[in-house]
Image 1 (cartoon, rainbow, N blue to C red):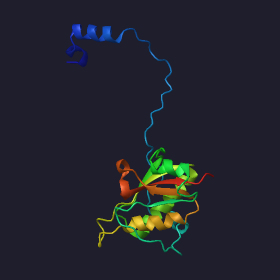
Image 2 (spheres, rainbow, N blue to C red):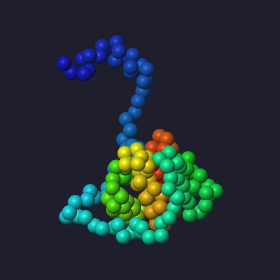
Image 3 (tube, rainbow, N blue to C red):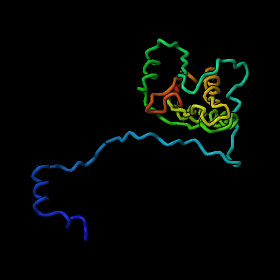
Image 4 (tube, rainbow, N blue to C red):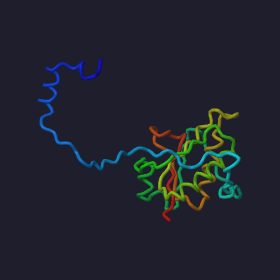
Length: 180
């Protein structure tokens, strides 16, 4: 039994009467706004590139934060209107990276590779999920604190802040890059 035989002639007529005259669209230029899946390559022994040198560990002495603390940084200052829009989650997220659950060195390499790919793709805003540290030994956020330190000193970073609750809240950040 095909689909159309389940619909009575009376229902078909009611549908046509309700819809009225229609005209087929010949060329629709509708752009569906779906988040792009990450196009940066998965790491394996054959294609592994070491971008970790772009994430510098030296001279990092920022204060440590708690899993529920908000983090924020802006090279233009906290009062910048563009930064205010970032904190409100008003920019389109063009890609995302999930680091939570990773060891520090693994997260550093993944972040460096991700940032390099974003640079080549001319991306403006991304979401980075770092978690709140509930799975760590002392229940404090290791990756969140490292991100807070690494990104403040990275030359590509314009600003970052904790995400809106719908995007992960204090377990994730929005990151915007400097214009090239």
